[in-house]
Image 1: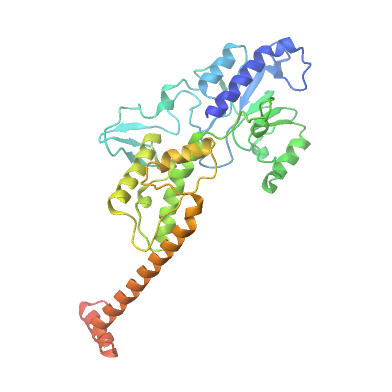
Image 2 (image 1 turned 90 degrees about the vertical axis):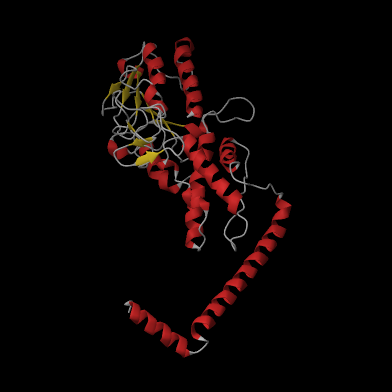
Length: 359
């Protein structure tokens, strides 16, 4: 979201200086003094995934555009993190006794304290789109610039012929699944501005719109939860299972607290015998890696150099082999203790089961 805010600042600046450029640039944003269609900005409804709740512009950005003479049309969306008409987003949130937050689908409880009514849902304190001066409507055909976050769906009328579209298209690397969208853009003669390609004109061409730290934070939290599921399938019960995915969390603080709580359990009791060390590798130093490290630092970690990994792997393999041998020996002793090593034990066990009513 921070990156999109930076992009909006460039967007707003371009809108203010465009009259002085006399339209001599290859691409300049339309100004309020031009024809009617060229001073309307549209915000499309995100349709790429069921969990997508982000928005390219916050209500305060809309208010800034409106105050500068622009019109803003917002496609209605019940999932968007900002509501269309000033009511609470995504049905309603109701503060309840006991420190929880109730929605139409889930009940969240804060583990440490009661929530101040509506205080935890920070976006509710902001002006919503209608209050900011936007118009809510399905028809985006009169817009000259359309903004979204992810790929648009041409079947929903979100690709307007001759319009300028800004969104993450995921086509710059030739992604096969998005080539039909690129074909549609060419057929409709739209100007596609991919956020990935908005770069600083200076040396190095640094991207101006990129993933932020929250992407790494969410990825790490969800990754730990999935790791817990994977380890459970392998027979290991770990504290990672108690880390809910971010979509189930009321907010960032709660998500980080759930990871910290898992870290305390690991610090106190370790991981299951035979599992060996869990190795986390961070291969970058950008925004995403920074957000991921913020989460990982809540766990009892020991920093290693890459050169130390082979020795760690050998040590872990030896520990797992020893644990497997102990399990085999324990199972063998248990079998001998129950049946004396012959068929009489099995017959006796069957008779006991029959007496208990389990056969």
